[in-house]
Length: 226
Ligand code: C5P
Image 1: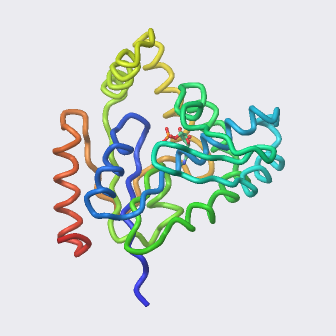
Image 2: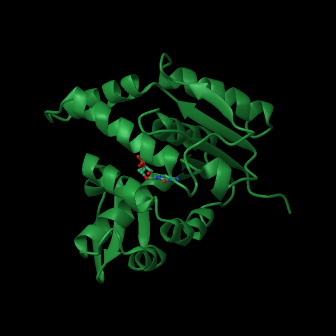
Image 3: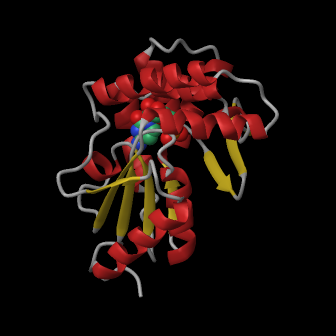
């Protein structure tokens, strides 16, 4: 039986990979895995239950026992028996930082591996993250690594937050992005890097529509789309 097709979209935060992955999954009518959301959920649930981010074993146990349901924009997570919507909480800057701290722990990554692989279902999966092409789906039929300069990524985040009416400092965002990049690229387990067989795209000067068009054309060439 042929393996369920997977397209992986990896890259640093703010490269546009989340938007690209969602648009691509919609275009193809495939499932979507937002793996960053899983690490964000582990971080948020740990904070709510006062689990120390240094307690790797407790965090891994928490990750293994997670009961999550993505329902449109709602993210249901069962916390201490209570079904809770964490959609807003996991999208904050703090949750991103917390996620990258717990994501550096090997036991947590191991616990989340099978949860991620469980998303591979017909007719296909678009998987968005940092190590989708290198570790989680090494046999993916198409691997994209989407990059953009740190300055451009900070600008994009700045505009997003301003549009939400939040007052933020561009310099602070740039610093945060650089710190998170360093942690993601420098960690011992599953560091952020393109798979050897990945196609590297740079979105610094490209709109998301232009990037999507390129990726759809690559998917067609790979026989994954019409
Ligand atoms: O993609 P997003 O910004 O939601 O991810 C939050 C953090 O989760 C990242 O900075 C990274 O540390 C971690 N992550 C990861 N591996 C993934 C997805 C996210 O380590 N596949």
